[in-house]
Image (cartoon, rainbow, N blue to C red; front, side, top):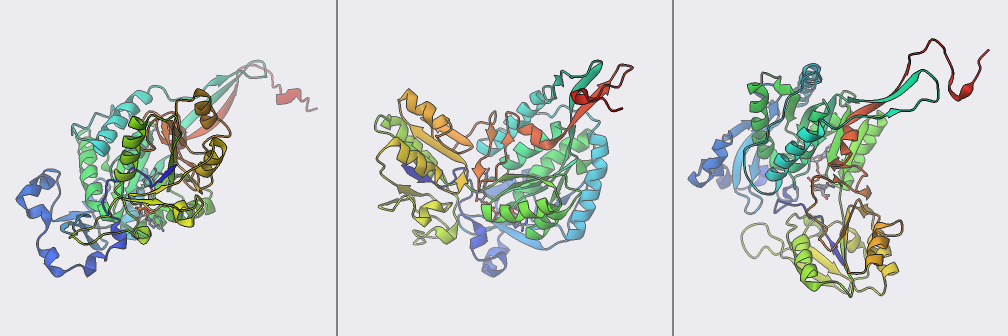
Amino acid sequence: MWRLPRALCVHAAKTSKLPGPWSRPAAFMSTLLINQPQYAWLKELGLREENEGVYNGSWGGRGEVITTYCPANNEPIARVRQASVADYEETVKKAKEAWKIWADVSLEMGKILVEGVGEVQEYVDICDYAVGLSRMIGGPILPSERPGHALIEQWNPVGLVGIITAFNFPVAVYGWNNAIAMICGNVCLWKGAPTTSLISVAVTKIIAKVLEDNKLPGAICSLTCGGADIGTAMAKDEQVNLLSFTGSTQVGKQVALMVQERFGRSLLELGGNNAIIAFEDADLSLVVPSALFAAVGTAGQRCTTARRLVMDRPGNYVEPTIVIGLAHDASIAHTETFAPILYVFKFKNEEEVFAWNNEVKQGLSSSIFTKDLGRIFRWLGPKGSDCGIVNVNIPTSGAEIGGAFGGEKHTGGGRESGSDAWKHYMRRSTCTINYSKDLPLAQGIKFQ
Ligand code: NAD
């Protein structure tokens, strides 16, 4: 059995564990990558040396200026002026105003033209998916037990969806939330990770243009770049009708408690600690590349646990590492390392290894490799994997947008993207309509 770190990382370093921006050598500050000819494409995205990190129909920002860095070698890319709490409050007000228009508008959300790989492609895919989905969401008409009555389930938008995203998936996670929330009739307010503020600005510039070209209020898709202060304001704010949070279990727990305190709604996508189980009948030509893709393809790092970190060359890299000889329940193996570190265990039988898969606190993704049909169905069943993503003969990573994405236990229980994940973004009303001249009560009660 291999236990894998979460596999959706596109960032090579968790920069929050690196020296803070202000402690970097001054030489870095003078040579922003954005001014170098090979990075001219950054300007084509509308980015400048200093960028405003607040968008609510117009651009602004009165918070601190941060520099964003290339995670591989710490070179400064450009600067972003973050949101102040006053910017945040003004933006929520404008988004709420914009909702009055958006809730009544039916606009085909066009495909973003940028052809790319990975995350950007996923945003494009989810836009396509959401446009189709917008013609299919709705509730059933249920049979009423009362004569002359209709029982209808009506779904309405929640209003303002706050979206807080993690550094390691700085485009697609917003895309999953943004596209589905919008076709449900909601407006969005996004706060990405501070280390990926430039990406948040670049993506919002694309969306802002679509809205403005269609003469719609830009605040429909607002942005407040910022850190924990803005995130906390969103979590505590009763005007944020749904808070979708993607990030670590540790921060997610704080956010969940703040939202619960106000009886708000949250959608949590938190840490994972994912296992691949290879049985003796597994096809090794599938297992080996799958394990490699899922383990080494995961470039994200949590520096606190990267004990095998190699810094004998410039830059921030974790050497892919295989660890053997640990007990299956060693505390390090139960911790999401967020680095390409792979723990390998030998197991005796199916019952034992299914239990090992489930014994960690997280419950995101899991895979087995086998040709045994009975075992496959036991893996999918009540005594099989307890994860939100349960795979057979494919790696733990690389989910498709058509299915609901998310996990159980300390992964938070939320679901995003496909299937019926849209229900998170709407409120349900059960409506009973009496079209008769009588007033029969439910359960046949005679109230005399
Ligand atoms: P993080 O928890 O450090 O930060 C996530 C977001 O929370 C950032 O935008 C951050 O600014 C914000 N934040 C920080 N303090 C806050 C507070 N007090 N209130 C509100 N918001 C606050 O996570 P990270 O290091 O950026 O990302 C890595 C983690 O995210 C890993 O644990 C990874 O597994 C998880 N993740 C999960 C999924 C998923 O779909 N389950 C996807 C991507 C990442």
